[in-house]
Length: 265
Length: 265
DNA sequence: CGACGCCTTGACTAATCTCAAGGGTGGTGG
DNA sequence: CCACCACCCTTGAGATTAGTCAAGGCGTCG
Picture 1: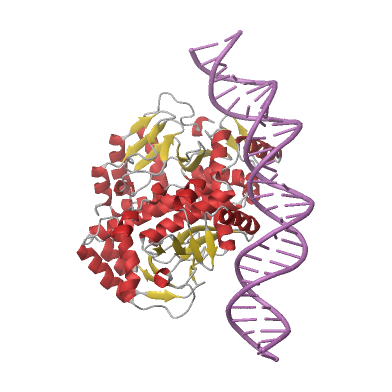
Picture 2 (picture 1 turned 180 degrees about the vertical axis):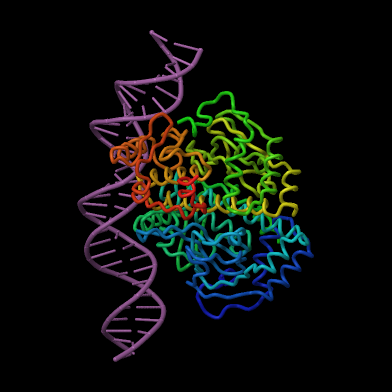
């Protein structure tokens, strides 16, 4: 149970660096572009640059100077945009191994905010690190970052499809499938369960639905035995069935299929 | 009137290369990162590599091998994703000066299709061109491409906000404002008018609304004197009013403000 | 002339939102 | 220990928005 718990609650953050790094390296390595040498470089560099934030901290604020690109090593964060009428749209989730906007260094004002959802451990790619990784000396690392950026763009496109073309229950099921797949690739699932630190309000702001409606469709999904959501543990008793019900296909995630790998190792 | 007409209808494509290039170079140069030398390089290189497609040609097909990055020099294209239930979501518009996915070279299968909406002139960044621009010899050109990629990501995020948080009339007004601003920056507007080759079905697939509903809200906007849409000419008699009605702010477009520039030159 | 693509409108249906109320839980301070 | 508050989840009822179905108009092209 605790094998996938990570930082559910703000509090003393685990300092076991090697474990902190595993999600990122695993995520990067899965693209098959990193050599052992690259991985060693990443591990030693990141271990020295780790920063920790508790839940609910703003990393970047809409309209402000953007942060340098950041790698999330542990915990969840999310990006959102605020409208003048107080409504809010969550535009991205950042999971362990994910990277915030890679080309952000060229921009003076960001269009969106980023906030930690749980306690997070991140590494900021300051100028020296950025130069080191993209300067030509570690071409495979640079390529891995580019792949992550492409994957983020593909997810953003799929969200437009989700918001534009799917019904309420489909939208909710779809985002749950996506998060589950993304977590599984970095080893943060336990069988058919995973940690899910989202409130129903978060889900509403992700899917563009009202809180009340999310609650009711979530109940339908529960009644149909497609999901179970107690505490902050999400269980998907039949992932395939939920995917079909949500018109979900993992293709857009550009992930390496780890379902076999899980079974073997 | 014809000063912004470009390729409204499939047919013989203008071959005045220097004019073809202007939108792209203008778009790039506006970021203030290009030197005259860079511009000269782009112009001579692109002039030799121009490709022309008529309206309705698939440039990339969902699930297929992606095209190399492409620069649109003239005409409109759009990206879309098809769902198994035959529904379709348009996820992007590519206007003169825009660039398709820049990191696409690392990917084996694309998640979305790209189709020309009008006749288009494009330049494909084949391996040699890509290497030339990003190999370190033209750092400002590489930076300009990165800025375009960032701008595309920001637009994609705003679309999620549009689809998730805005009402039908706001969504429709918002996308019209966005396209108008983007066209103005590359010199493709004429006062408060621009060429708009979209059908109401296209608008429906962009905004996630039904065709019938788009038609009725479009009528409302017309009756409120916020838009006029005859032939394929869009007129915005009061851009500010439409922006307020649509909760639109151009910040996310990362554009240089050209409204003064237009008035002066 | 007929076919086709696109736009328009009305009537009815279905999905989603808003408003309102109440319940559970955990933390905090008296 | 209990009272209270904050936050989150839950449910029902009625209002509103958007979708579906059906029909017709208008212009272009063969």
